[in-house]
Length: 69
Image (cartoon, rainbow, N blue to C red; front, side):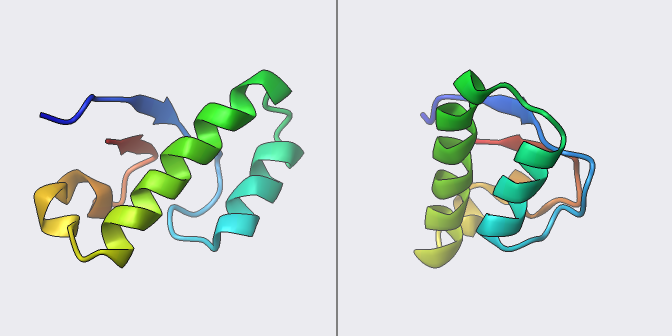
């Protein structure tokens, strides 16, 4: 079973390019020490989409301000 992580994202759109998420992260003043966890979660979400494993984690496709892995 996958470890469950919940992280509140920025206030911008849910679907954005990775660099747009990072810029929003910076613009909204998230602490630098949270950046590695944020990046890890974003990369994991991208991996599940890229490897066509999204069906195993349907919560990733919800229009929701939370990302759950």
